[in-house]
Length: 432
Image (cartoon, rainbow, N blue to C red):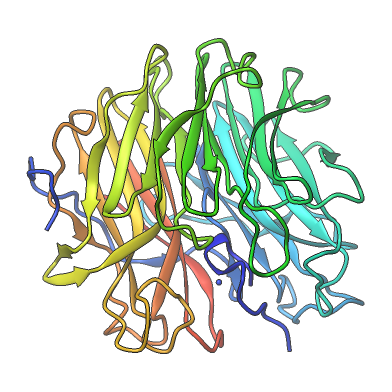
């Protein structure tokens, strides 16, 4: 397993707020597993269509057999499941493999708008003998019927290049993908105006940060779109400087836009990456950007004309449900309704044996914590804890959140696992 939060770790073989609470917290139902066993994703893995909820995940013990992968087969793959949007618990279909069974694939991402779904995955040459300096190739698949059937895969990167973790988005009649070109540090963007058949690529920024695991440059970019409004954000330096570019012309000018500094130094360990998402409702121009600072998690909104001033969502140390969280990483953000915002992040408790946000440290206890605003981040509801890492073994780590809204129901999914990786899967909770 190599989620964005655990990219430098060993793969599976053999990942008091400053704002004044405004209203009562959102209420969520119980957690339910939405993947097959032995599965994970690197965030941005939930999407809602006209009347479906979709999830995407990778598995190295892939269904239907559940036999674990090797280099001769079965191979690690990427899968999509669908549920009726009206199902509170999720009435999930059988997993549909969207990566060819002949390749090793992971690092998935998914986005949807109306009946259109765009999904991405990255292929690598070996699973058992994975080499971080070997080629990694980005592929896109598109569905025009809410994920029921899919077009053939389209390759977006060179066969000999190295793609870091990609993200996808769709809106305003255009599809987007962003990733780091790990050999050069370029932040790359691809767009399609013909339902994913043809793509144009451009460089929209760069990063000087290299992964300590030998996988090359790593900017960990994300992108969001709402109508003609587009925003992208990434790490530009190893010291944690994060930048963003914005457009109100469908992204046509992102390659020439001057990046805006979101923050100067900030935590940068491959986990504290920014999240960007466009509004869930048609006609809502907002694109939200959530990003870590040295003291907490901030949020800004692009409305087509300017970026808002920062709103602090979480401030470390944050006390949620009587539990103290010293840090947090890997956020998810979603604008919905007319002025509502949802934010989730992996919150890290005190670790007597080391830093709190190291998922595979012996004493790590990491929970999913959530906050909602009804007024575009002017005030925030009381934060709530959606997992209990210290009291519900075997899952001590809950991270890589994803958010979606179906009707009036908010959905939150995340990975859950522990140091031994004897169990790992994806679960979801839905608001009442």
